[in-house]
Image (cartoon, rainbow, N blue to C red; front, side, top):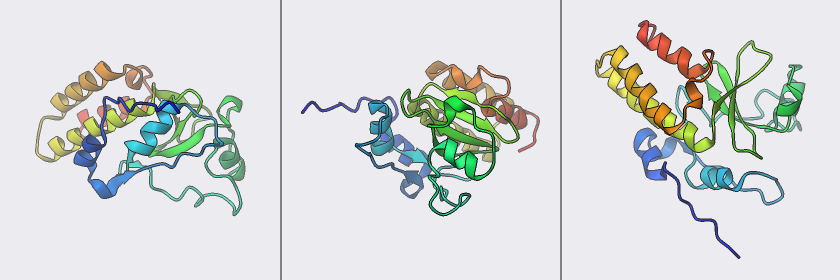
Length: 189
């Protein structure tokens, strides 16, 4: 049996250092489900953070009727009588981020946001590793903001670091990342 090596730029220790051990969610691997192997390895070995900003530990069935598959978007949206774009029906719910539901296309590994009140979605990361990299940098930004670092400086630094890793988070003006940085710079935080 060939083993898939776990060569990620983002490590489990980085996420634990940024969020603490009790704020990391690991995902089990399901052999009968078709998904991108690299994404599955990342989610099961590195995980996702859980915080007040990025809520990945929410009860996935809390908003659905008993017996409903609350992981896949199509069934989840159907149970809430919401429109779900046809291509996104088999995608999985990962978390909530500010005012967006965050979803994963398990076949490609791409990460999307469904902004509240929108009928569509925005690709926000090329993969889950990029999402977690941005969340680790965002946690650093939050800490520096609490310590009085200039919001303008924080926004520029965050955008530079994240863009160097993945340019997709800032490609759409309506991306939650762009909106969050605007709020930071406008002093809304």
